[in-house]
Length: 306
Length: 259
Image 1 (cartoon, chains in turn yellow, blue):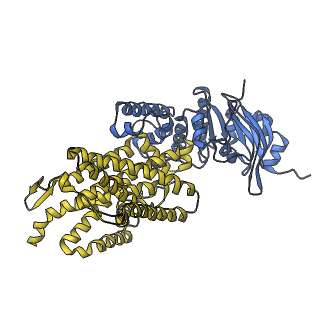
Image 2 (cartoon, chains in turn red, brown):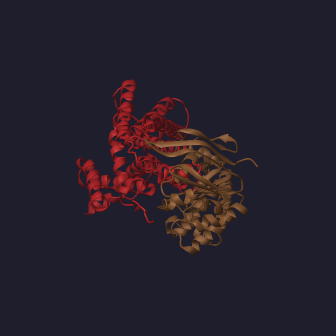
């Protein structure tokens, strides 16, 4: 028991870090589902592409004398823009032509895009693992000691950037014309169109924002966990999807909550049980939540009062 | 006076079923043109054709003399034709003011950069749109103002939902309002009030109105021009009094007299 309390603060920090990454991935899943009722299974691979974009920028700039802050900012911004554009392209060519097809069709198309992205990276960059040189950007000596725990610089960075992005997203969705349009399109596409909302543009913007968050998550994930490879998106996508469903898919705060919930569950499983149980816990959590609250922990009741 | 909206020889089939058959009519600016007819006469299909959800098989629709056939629904709305729905289609989980503001999407001058960085332009635009939305809601007296602004749309009564739909359509700054059974499901008092309101929309706000309504007290009270449809064809047109005494109209509603 003493051991438990000694470890707890560190596990909370670890859970926050992992949860932040999951939450950022889950947001993209959830937003796209909310607006198109489409499970974008290529989303995890967009995250993987983000990790590689960040890696590319880092490799190119480490040899220059640019300060770390600039390099990290560039990595995140480039991954966000790159993934955002990628998301828009995927929507345009893989999903939009199937907008009125049976729902199974875009789902298969999403799996196709997922395989396509994995194989593009495998063919062009090989199947090797790459390693983020985080220590050269943020020396391990930076950090705060909190009793038995240590908040390293990189973990602090991940948590701060993730919270900042989530705050911005929440603001965008709640308090801007784009957010209103997104919610209107999610509720009733035809009615929104007849109120002058350009539905295609709103869907594009949704893909851009969701994919940009996945790109940022890719870089942050690389900075904390170092190793990236072409197949990493599969697992990350499953976890992001699980987090989105646990929180209540289609719901922005739900995705954030689900991400942290899953992050903590996994971290505690690793820390207090055994690392072997990491993935088991994720999916036990999913099944338990679906049994008890099928619409997710924060899932909204459908309002159908006439 | 040139027509605000003109339909020329519109045909529309669903499968083998002819829903609109060689229909032509004009709506004059600043007038209320009412479309009446028995169930299944094609009235709502006609509104869907005008607002761009359906494309006519042939024929043309002119808005201020320019064809709008083939445009996307949001483009037609941006040009100045807004509508309400027979079966209400509000964004129920959004607040009342947000429902109205959502209809200003195409007019809001801001881009993603403005939104993310909350530039002064973003704040100015949001404030301007909010003021405008409050003004539109003010058209309905005290029902949808004040503390109501930030309540969710699902908290509204049925009649208030109908009013909110009209306010939302007004927010697109239309020239033509298409009202699809605005008095459906209302009690006699509310119906009287809606009738007066539609008159105000014409007289004070200056909209051209195309009205679909089953309630003859509404149609008779305010229509400038009445068009009767049956099985997708125009069977009569003119003043309310002329139309309701027309033999074919009586027949369409009540059936043929046995002789």
